[in-house]
Amino acid sequence: MSCNNCEIDLFNGILQFATDDAILELYYNHGMLLRSIDCPVCGQTCVKSGIYFRCQKTWRISIRDGREFETTKCNFRKSIFHKTWLERSQLALQQNFRFMMMWLQTNASREELIFNNVGISKQTIVDWSMFCREVCIYACHSSTVRLGGEGIIVEIDEAKFGKRKYNRGRIVDGVWVFGGIERFTGNSFMVAVPDRSSATLLGIIRDRILPGTTIISDCWRAYDCLAHHGFQHLRVNHSLNFVDPTTGAHTQNIERTWREVRDNIPSYGRREEHMEGYLAEYYFKKKNIPSD
Picture 1 (cartoon, rainbow, N blue to C red):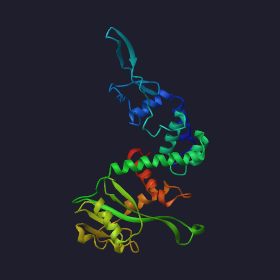
Picture 2 (cartoon, rainbow, N blue to C red; picture 1 turned 90 degrees about the vertical axis):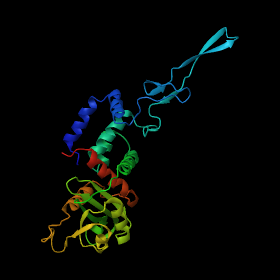
Picture 3 (cartoon, rainbow, N blue to C red; picture 1 turned 45 degrees about the horizontal axis):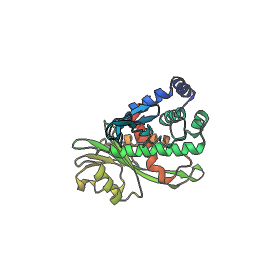
């Protein structure tokens, strides 16, 4: 999703009413911050005061033969940002909120947009983008489900994300990504792979797709063994047809997914070791942010 001037106006309009208290309440509602903690010293629930949790428990301590006492407080205090990704942030709360709104609502070509509208350095933008992608990776790993099953179709394909010399000629650098998408539900997976060998791809297929699934692929030879591993296998020869004239098999859904992924990862400055994060970002946004 690209961010035009109307979207920037929308962001600014929202921020006019986004007080620090409103932003904190939003973060509480989304589980980014805890509403309360128990004091590790005395076990009492701490009271939130400003940006701190404070323990208000008091004791009376005998100081002379049980006849004279003094009152003492626990005085435990901990920041509400403790053990969250905001704990060591040098960004003001408004900057953090503005950054995350723009990061979630725009594609990967957003550095200048954020730089001009948030007021943070480009290195900070890079660092926080990496933090956000780490969260996306964790969320994707936590919600992994196997696709398919009896009577369900899953399309699979590989795509190389790379660059061409002078924008023409053969691809000279890049990363192979293997993916699958389930018909009708849109559930999917995408994995960066070192190669397209049968051993590599079959291992992922058996890990991510249930036996009995009808798998549709192109005619890449690495898929020739699928029928021997509990899958129904249909092929489409893309050198002849986009849709097989006999079976009706096609991989148009996964092909469309590759186009969407390409639109949402950087065209320049992309590092191979960050591909998992780019894929996780795309998957997280597709699952959690409604499209227009």
